Image (cartoon, rainbow, N blue to C red; front, side, top):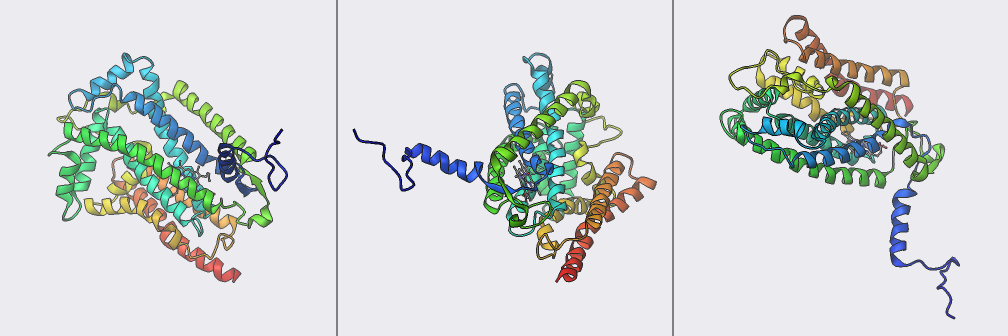
Length: 392
Ligand code: HEM
């Protein structure tokens, strides 16, 4: 009887599909990662889990939602009251958006603090920045869809901000709103943007993760893997990633069930009324730093440039930091201090964005803005030079 074919290593040859599977497992499952990765390296997996939740709940909500200025608010009410478990799906989608943005900011700050943007991971950082912009646009478009008071006036403020751009501003405002003021054409645009970008984000995330796998993860100690040692992705990091996802899921359910008012904006439960401007028009919490910057400057174009620049500057980070590699880094106390100042600056501008921009709040917003930009335009280039020279 013919025996099993034997390979040069003495083991039986595997069928083609098994070969492919084992190649995949080798590339992904057995991927060697620095042994000293900490819990902050689980946030990427958490982001993937929330993204999946957002897609599933979002797709289900579209079954009932109607993007028409006369019907949108009512269709959202139908989701809440008539669609089976509609209230739960909508609550999960809304809470998921806040959790996603929070995780995204933590993920970004992790990369900034450990300088994961340095070569050879520049492309990973840039694709991350592109994801940030796409997620922000998707979140903004989603906020317009329920057509409550904040949705309407948020779209109005954004339209006017776009209109303040020189030369093409008026034209762009028309393209954005689809008319002179927010209405059904605006809703069609926002719906298409919200729906389409969600799938584009999935594609870019796949590229982002493929890049991380190709370049390898950076290590929190910034030492070469020969010094830190390596562990395979599975089971060491898959198990930790899953545990992090379970812990975040518990916090998610906690907020959803016991603290819903943390996420919900009551003004958006009033239907859009173009004849009644709310006393305070404010965006979701995750846009507040950028909204505060937009308001802290007396002329619209300046505000727009400064708040857009706050995101744009992130793309330049790998070139602003002049260090040779992550090992040539400022002492931990300096890095912690400057990172703390960056976060406090962003929170200060965000708090100012919640208030009428005058008097002391204007001062707080401007100081916060200076602190934010100083981190990128002063600290990063200087720290890179100082510690490069110090170690050279
Ligand atoms: C939809 C949003 C995003 C998803 C789903 C995502 C997912 C991931 C995953 C799964 C990893 C590998 C595991 C980890 O290191 O945590 C990763 C790594 C990374 N991400 Fe993201 N990411 C997103 C957005 C961003 C953003 C906004 C940035 C920064 C601007 C960024 C920068 C990075 C960097 C630099 C790494 C490599 C870290 C290392 O050296 O190990 N990502 N991302």
